[in-house]
Length: 262
Ligand SMILES: Nc1ncnc2c1ncn2[C@@H]1O[C@H](COP(=O)(O)OP(=O)(O)OP(=O)(O)O)[C@@H](O)[C@H]1O
Ligand SMILES: [Mg+2]
Image: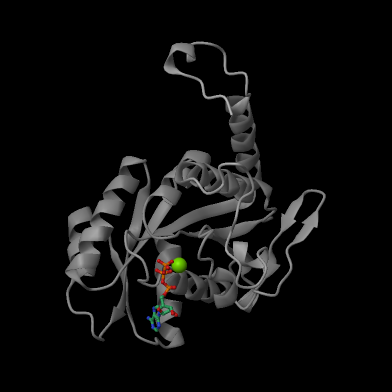
């Protein structure tokens, strides 16, 4: 592999990469033309219930007649398909793109889980496949393809379920025709509040609009008031306090709140 040095950077880029990315962004904009609202679900912290909240909020919106999709942007730990009962749903590849599987309550879902063999991690082919930097670039490219290839059709809301951390959010934001609205999930603890604060600041720096905070796993072992604190600091609403094993009315209320907020 030949690596260009900074002396050569003024030469025209012969890989055509820039042109490819521009074409892919154009395709993403066309794909998302029928999507009325895109909501990225993020948190600086892992395991706080992003995927759980996304799946249940999506189902509750679908139950009141909204057309809803979930894109699982967690390529390494995909869970959305299982949460929506669509893990065995095959993704049909048609001439005009990948058709999402239909999950519980009619929520359309696309997840790496539907493409990977049972229990196998996402792996890339190539001489540098094990390199950290190469893998990051390959994952960003996989996300671009994912977003550019899915034929969602007309949707009222598309949720993008993100992995923990910030990198995938930034890759997503760069791809989209407009910065997304961000639904932030935290648990009550101060540590979660710190992690979420950092992530949310960075997301806002990318131009994202904060939709609100969901405080999850309330009333159990986790003590604190991260939900209220973050809502106050960012001047954004605390959309819901979700207890352990919530009843359906909690999701219905959250769905209504989200619908009114976007
Ligand atoms: N309110 C809740 N009541 C009961 N179980 C919950 C609740 N919220 C989350 N869980 C469970 O906690 C676990 C972690 O949730 P989930 O996978 O949604 O977190 P996540 O933030 O998406 O994690 P990751 O950072 O790995 O993507 C799951 O087993 C989920 O079913
Ligand atoms: Mg998750």
